[in-house]
Image: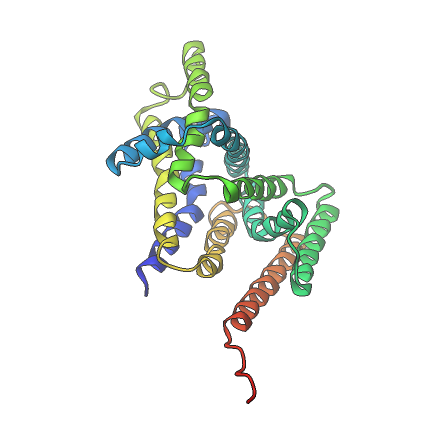
Amino acid sequence: MQKGVWYAVSAYVAWGVFPIYWKLVAHVPAVQLIAHRIVWAFVLLIGLGVATRQHRTLAAALTWRTVRVYVGAAAFITVNWFTYVWGVNHGFIVETSLGYFMNPIVSVALGVVVLGERLRPLQWLAVGLMTAGVVYLTVSYGAPPWIALTLASSFGLYGLIKKVAPLGSIQGLTMETGLLIVPALAYLVWMAGSGGGAFLRAGASTSALLMGTGLVTILPLVLFASALRRITLSMTGMLQFIAPTIQLLIGVLVYKEAFSGAQLVGFSFVWTALVVFGAEGALARRIQAEPLPAPAD
């Protein structure tokens, strides 16, 4: 198997088992967890940038236009991180997995609405099936699956901004966390001063896990970036469903979250949409790859 495939699989497996890590610090409020994630990720990213000599490139890219782009990216990834951690630690792992199953098709829909991209008929069918799944879950729940919708839309909008952003994934995340570092540190200092901070107060293991939030943020991204340099986007697209599948299994089998018949029906609409979407994409790529017929003499 290609090294790039192993890198991608490793990244998606890491993202898939994230709920277990966040459950270990479920006693820490989600806002504190995200603040620590920002701070420790920024520290590691700066170290990585210095070690790979990318910090000079990042410094040269600090223009007002670049900063404005990454302010939006930072806002959406913060919403995504907070929603995910809150959902996991409040017993909604199954619904968080639904959000990441929905994400590819939400990204396509955003491309249509925002960028004016055109969809082929089977792609419209996939969008329709996913919409039907969300409507069915809304009716069966009595309320929309807000966690899944927030995760899918925030990450879709984050990806939309990153599509036009000038920096690579690691440098971009460095800038995003750098823009958030001051409010994150200010919040943690305020919590420590008021006696509500968990770091160095809730035990050595909790402090170590809080510091580790930076590593669990950066490591999968580094693996993913390495994979993208070695394999095609279509291959990474096929592999990306490893993560929400693992999350779903962890939620149901490890943490015994409910998975009702109604949820199964709703998820089935989304899964069918993904199958249609993936098969249509594979067929379209095969047609494009076929050589044109030779002109007749």
